[in-house]
Image 1 (spheres, rainbow, N blue to C red):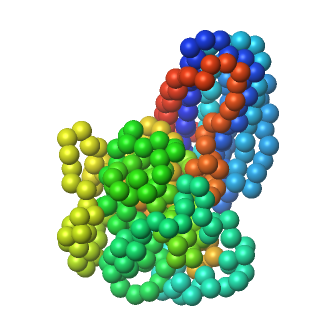
Image 2 (spheres, helix red, strand yellow):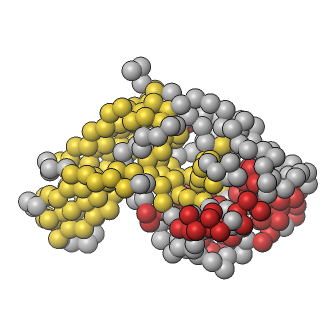
Length: 319
């Protein structure tokens, strides 16, 4: 799929600021799954943009020294994503969690197994894990992760503004509502609890080019058990429920999870939308949690208060 993306970030300050230094993580990565053919980053006021590369993606940075009351950052990308069948690509029938008992696995992927500030230890996850296991037959890891993807999609409700980047995951579990980063953080916590290396992926979803592939159906008695335990939050007025016909986060950056499966490869799962990641997704940066991959991060001299506006446009590109 050929996609064109435009991501506009606008900061407005109540009084003049200066020495505004920013890091930007908005350039799609290049790998066997996608190719970023073009990328432009423009700022207003105009600034000289530099970059450095990390294993997790490219980071651009710039500094606006003169006084200004508004800063606009426009990132434009063209990306080609590779088609395929992400479900058929999963290594069904592979060993269960015994694959992760290897010292080599635990050492090589230690950073994606350890707790973080946003994905802490000690969360009440046992019921979710039990139901996800009960909803599938067999012990293979891909089947469990697929089931977990479905269960999280059912127990959390998507609502813009329900949380912010610093909302504790315990609070998300209690209220059972949040945004894509909360779905991703909860899935990370469960996978890491079980010893499955899992990383946070930041990017984009072209909602017009993706479907759920019928993956939101829970097997066995899992659906009724979730209801009996009160784990499915009922719809209420003003709540944007993640229904089978609606995909979310097409107008902003999106977040999902990549799990290391027993074939030794990373596979993407989106619990917000109950999708196995396909060619409608554009991968930008990955890390241990959101704190490693914020689209923009900066410091400046001036009043602390500011207004942030973000808009994302994704269209299919004729080439």
